Image (cartoon, rainbow, N blue to C red; front, top):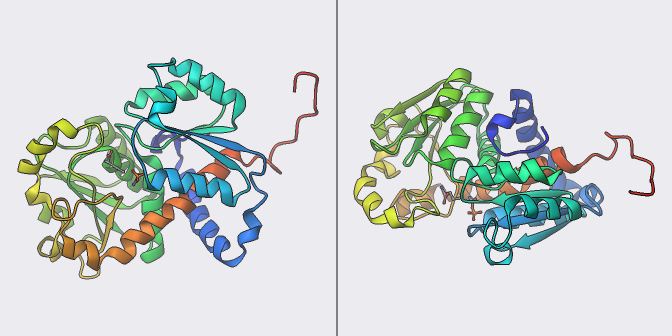
Length: 315
Ligand code: CP
Ligand code: NVA
């Protein structure tokens, strides 16, 4: 694993390791916070954002600080990725100065191009196709509140980036995944096929069918960043796919509700359901910190695993 652009970059062992490591790092942060101070000392993460963020930015920045490293936030207007400067040139500059890059972009091909040119690990902090860091935190949360064995997640709403990564990760680690979307808003067939090759994944247009027997019901916004002009149309189509108490009555009685946030109460989730399930939803948000730390340490912590190179004249 040199980069983390997609859940498809992970083997099953990688995926289970990252989830378990996120749980371990969370415990360690509480019990021995100073244990992490030196792990990434002197290392720098460049954080490139083409879109807004709360959780992704703060979790990566806090994770770097906890581990003794530094994170540099680069706002959309700072770089003009691909406009002010070619992606390949930005990648080579950041790769020359920093130890890793995390990027939130519009097009998946942008993170692929960054990875081709940076010469350093690149992490996908969300693109149009995937949100792999989110999926690690999501299954960490399921593992904490329940377990990963013999579990079913029902994803209700838009077959989007969050849906793709969660579906791929569930299939990889043996969690059943059932997805209910309106017609025309299904996940991309390529991702469905990849997930179905690895695990138990089903699609439907009936939310009640999807949540039947689910241990966890998951949703995300109906209109993702970059789709704003479709918002009015989506608001007409998606209401039968709202997560609310009536829909949850078809799931297991103790089913968790997860949401990657930000949430739109009264749209993809009712205000009542959101508040009833706020303990797990905000644990899920906090778990982004621990999941990101696990990803960063997997890609950046070479101390003790790689023999240090002797200093040379060009070092
Ligand atoms: N869930 C998530 O990625 O949140 P942000 O968009 O605030 O980073
Ligand atoms: N699907 C959403 C996720 C936000 C974290 C988006 O891409 O805007």
